[in-house]
Image (cartoon, rainbow, N blue to C red):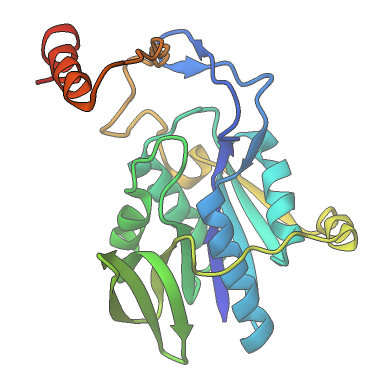
Length: 256
């Protein structure tokens, strides 16, 4: 079985992002990591390959320095990787999905594709659906339990209020991994050293016939989030506090 895991190179969620220009950010001092939700996909793919046999391929669309993120993913047990290089900091999901499809077409289509349920930077939650559409494959997102058999996958998702839904998909298909699917492993030092020797094939958008500016969605402007104002302490009896809170919401904050 050939399993492909789409891994995004994203800023660490603890990083301080500084806007640069109209629609970019300063990347020089930011630590980049694998999108946390994608790590659940990596773990599930590697575990499946260990149990059932097969090859795990990491596929990333990102800048040249995304190699560091890819090496980390391969240290978890993936066999090789593909990097589709782009200079765009915030590539739209349509172009990203086309790039992923183009790379898979060249490398050979997998039997199973993992993504994270979404990325922690742009949070568009569209790429997995667009990719599945371009590949004409079934897709299910926010998967918290998965069983893979010879010709099908049985996925479990939470639909709220403690209720769960079980969905059966024919292979090949696209699975959007969510927290709870597994516990991603921490690579050991020997695995990190082995990952440095594993193959990374590089491609670019132009070689796949894709125009990076051809997407239908673009970011016109980025603005830093406004700083939070100081907290207000309301004193008095419960009745006085509620009355004052309502007044603040109506007159000062104008949200009621």
